[in-house]
Image (tube, rainbow, N blue to C red):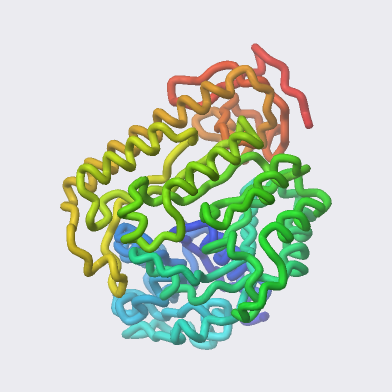
Length: 447
C-alpha cells in the first residue's frame, strides 16, 4: 500500500446509475490500496473509464475521453472497464493510449492487475466468457451527491431483441438481503438522505447470490426490509419492468415511511406488434393497468417512461400508435432512446429498417411530448406542500432539489440548505420550466 501512497487515480463513468454505483465501489478499492482519488480533469497516474454499450454515442465518446486523459498526462495508465469492455474488449484495446481492458468479472479485482504501470504498446485484455459472470458483487455510489445509488441486482435473463445487456452482464443474480441492508446502513451512517435502488432488472430481485434460480427473497421482501433501515429519509425505485411491478409493491410504497411516490417503468413501444418484435414480456394493456394502479393508490405519483423510437418495423402507423398512446396516458415524463443497431442482437438483422432521418424526427416529436407531459405534471402539483431535498451544486446562483414525487425545484443559492429536507408550497413555474421558490415570498419549514 505504501508504494501507492503518492499515486493518483481518476474515474470517468458512462451510462447508467448501475455503472455509477460500481465505479464508486471500485474507487473505494483503490483508496483501500493507498491510492489518492482525484478528479478526471486533474493529472493522474491511472485513469479508469467505465464504459456503456447501450447507445452508439457512448461507444464513440470513449475515444474522446481517452484523449482527455492523455492531455492531462501522456504517460498515464489507462484502463477500460464496463459493458463495452466486456462486449468488444479487442476493439477498446486497439484505441491509442489504452493499456488494460477488464471484462465483467475482472473489473472488481482491478487492483490485482496494477503491479506494473508501464505504458503498453497494445492494450492488454483480461475478459471472461460471460457465462462465468455468475457471482454477485455488491456496490453503491457515494460522493458529493445527496443521493446514493445502491446496487441490489445485476444481469438479466430477458431476451429483448435490441439489447446487449445479457451479453455484457450475464444472467440475473441478486445481492443477499443481509448485504443490501448492511450497505444501506453504511450509506445512512454517512449522512446521505436518499437511496436510489439500482440494477439491470431490479424487479427480478430474489434470484440466488450465485446465479442459482431458487428464489430466496422477492422484490417486495427487499422493499419491506429497506423501509425499516434507520436514518434513511427517502428510498426511490429507479426502473422496474411493468410485468414485475406488482400491486403489493405499489400498495406498500403508497403507505411506506420512506419509499417515495415515483416510478420509472420502461414501455419501449405503444404498439403491441412492436412489443412482440422486441420480445417484451407484456402488452400495452398491462402498462395501462400498472399506471392506473399507481395513480389510484398515489394520485400525485410521478411516472417516468422509457421509449425507443425507430425500431425495425416501426411504420408511421405504429409510431403514431405509440405517440397517441403516450399522449393519453397519465404519465409525467419520457426518456426517449433513438434505436441504434447493436451487433449480435436479433433486431440488427430485422427487416423494416427506419432511416436515421426519420428516427431523429420521431425522437424530436417524443421529446416535445415529454416536455408537455412534464409541464402538465408540474402544474398539477402547484398548491401542494411537498418535501424538497436540496443538492450541493451552485448552478448560476440557484440551489436545486427534488420533491418526493420528482418535481425539480430551484431556490436562490444558500449553502446552508445543501443536503437538507424542507417542506415548501409549490406556487410558480419559472421560465426554464422548473418550480421556483423564493425566501422573500415564502417561509421554509425544516423537516
